[in-house]
Length: 276
Image (cartoon, rainbow, N blue to C red):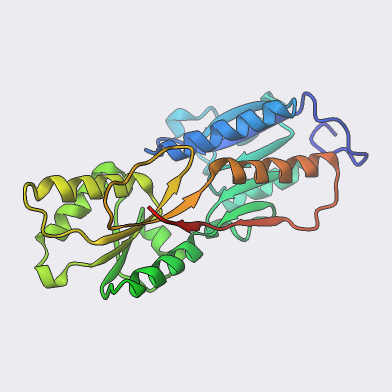
């Protein structure tokens, strides 16, 4: 009974919410998002526990049987009432959460759209909007940057792609672009990963010093809370406010714990294009 939402909309004081975060993301984004969630939960008088997703049996007390080894032990040990996850659970983990009666709200892009309770960050719409802007600016050869082949398959944008998932990965992409014949180089690039874009832009500038002859237009996302600065006038920027969708997820999950009927179980967050 401890894990079930109070049908009478009981108090939230003392409720424990677990925040699941992917280990070693390589970006300040996930840490900032988790920090905002913890702040918002604390303001609601809830306890907050952060734990890492890991598929490494050596790091888990109950290894081997899911993408989140030890999930049940973590949730029972800390008597968790709900979960906010910054990365998708494996199908077997979702079923185990349902069996335990623990509600879970996911935050992420369209690969979580089938989750029962979620805040969907509309990356596909960002890619389409960015593509239109770049095309309107005269770009003829547009590519996207993805962090993995799996992410590329999910987004299915029909754009040529290059893979990179870190600052060094962005720099490696820059080296590949500079090694291409000049006529084959893309004149427009789309990426939603701030870390990859930073590495890409830094390498493009430093590798060509003192004479910069190639600098494509780059469409990317800035986070108000992280304070990224992109000096190039070749940047097409879209804004997102991490605290806004952190608040959406917290409110969505806590309403379930209060026993409120959910009219809308998926909320959508859209990026807004801004001037540099």
